[in-house]
Image 1 (cartoon, protein in one colour):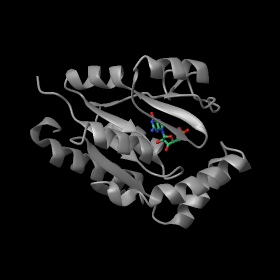
Image 2 (cartoon, helix red, strand yellow):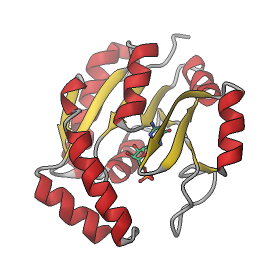
Image 3 (cartoon, rainbow, N blue to C red):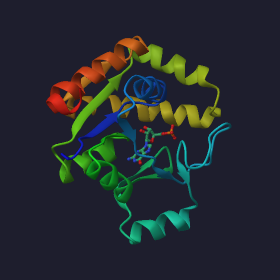
Length: 190
Ligand code: 5GP
């Protein structure tokens, strides 16, 4: 069986990555999601082992020392890391694996696995993004301000990505992502 492809999806906070991913997985169940580790506390409704594996900082550092991570980054003041073991196991099974990671993590993956497919999700405009961040209601004012500043910085990194998808409508964004994966994988993705 041929190895699956690694797909890196980045985009600023509030752009709608989770919504797009959710719709993507319902349309294409053969895509797999790599659950990251984070030291961020769970938001209401987030389940350990589903959204993330939630760990304390000491555990995160131990895992890092043990070589568990393909990449790590500090995002909005919290540690995040992609499990190398989980990703490799899924790729070896022939599954295509999606990482929802920030621009620093994507840069690290680009160094190690340049054959991955790099997609940046863009908001229709910065104004729309700011409104979505405020509307989300899951973060306090400080967190929103930090995410807003990080978002502007992240947008500047978009040009390093091979593919850009504007999240104007979730359905269209999902369609464009599937087209990119299919074009990059040939018969494998279809
Ligand atoms: P959130 O805390 O809102 O779920 O995610 C915040 C940011 O962290 C998002 O930009 C997301 O892409 C990024 N992120 C989530 N998991 C990882 C990871 O494993 N590695 C890196 N580098 N970034 C991640």
